[in-house]
Every structure is written in structure tokens, then in C-alpha cells.
Image 1 (cartoon, helix red, strand yellow):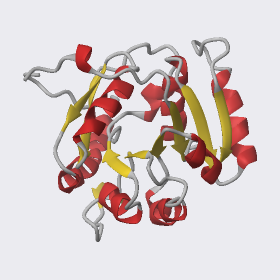
Image 2 (cartoon, rainbow, N blue to C red):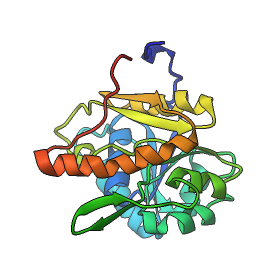
Image 3 (cartoon, rainbow, N blue to C red):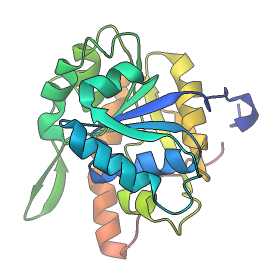
Amino acid sequence: MAYDATTLPDVSGLTVGIIGGTGDQGRGLAYRFARAGQTVLIGSRTAERATQAAAEIAALPYVPEGAVVSGGDNEDVARRSDVVIVAVPWDGHAATVAALAGPLAGKIVVDCVNPLGFDKQGPYALTVAEGSAVQQAAALLPESRVCAAFNHVSAPLLADPEIDRIDLDVLICTEDRELVGVVGALAARIPGMRGIYAGRLRNAHQIEAFTANLIAINKRYKAHAGIRVTDL
């Protein structure tokens, strides 16, 4: 079955919260969703830092006048959002996610964290006891609807106001097939992006680990490489 954007649900009314929204990846995603007119909540350990980041994002070029971009601490954002994107550093992933199990109950949770280590030879994939970052999140959030997505989106591309299209595919891993449509529709709010189902959560390790390869590609070719799936 070919990819058909006309079958995607309307997600324009959903509130998207970003845990770790003050980091590069989180800010970049927040900017793109705000630019598309999505209601965006920035989460951080401190509400003050999140509020400052939200104000900065709302003031960026091409964000529509009147766009709703606000900040709060992580728990507040988790409670107020329909879809929550986890974009925290790997070393704080388990503690942050576990602390939000209550407010994230019943919510769609999108994990885009890549467990990577770095040494003199460059980045490499870390071993995760649960199998992957998203599987760790799913184990810690038994009452949430969890998927992996946005793992391979370049933060510099997201943050650059002069780039109006980001031509890549967002690979989605989940046990909940309904989430593929919802998250794919959110991805499609960013011009050039497609959301593609890439298997169950057990397949997410390869996707997270492949980020190390993309970093090597970007370094070698001075690029911001992404993924595009052919024949769809």
C-alpha cells in the first residue's frame, strides 16, 4: 500500500508538549510545530526556563501571530498536553520518564531519544537493558500509549528559519497502530516530512542506533542527513 497523506487524521487541534523542550532537539521540534500553527507547550525542570524558551520560540520568524507557545515544568506540561514528545538527554531519560508516569497516564508519548556514547572514535550505540530508549519508556509508562519517532531529524535544520521544507521520513515504532496515523499526521505538519510505520517497539533499537551512522555521514559530507524510504 502506497503512502497516502489524504488518509491521515486531523491533528491540528491537539496540544503538543515537549519534555526537554529547552534542548536543541526539543526547541527545534517546538519551533516547527508552532510554525505550523500547533499549540505547543515547552517543558523543563524549571518553569522559568521553559517560559523563557517558549517566548523565544514564539518570536522566531514565520511563527504565526497569535500562535500558542507556552512553558511550564515537566509535570505541568505532561498534564496539559494531548501528545507528549520526550526529547531529554539519554542520561536523564529513565528518571525523567519515571517521574511523569502519573500525569502521562492515558497520553500519547513519543520518544525521540537516542542512547549514544561518544569517544575518540566518534558516536556509538549504547546497550539498553530494556532493548531501546522507547522500550524503557514503555516499561516505565504502562498506562501511556508509547511510540518512537523523530529520532533522525536534524536539530540544526529544525531550528533554521530559512529552511521551509525538511525532506525526510519519520520512522515510527509502536505496538499501537492507531498511533501511526496520529504521529504521522503530526510529522506531516512539517512540510516535506512523512511518518512511516517501521515495526513494533522491539525494532526501535536499530533506528535509535542508526543515529550514530548519520552523525558519521554528516561529519564526512558536512551535511544534515536524514532518512527517506523508497517505493512508498
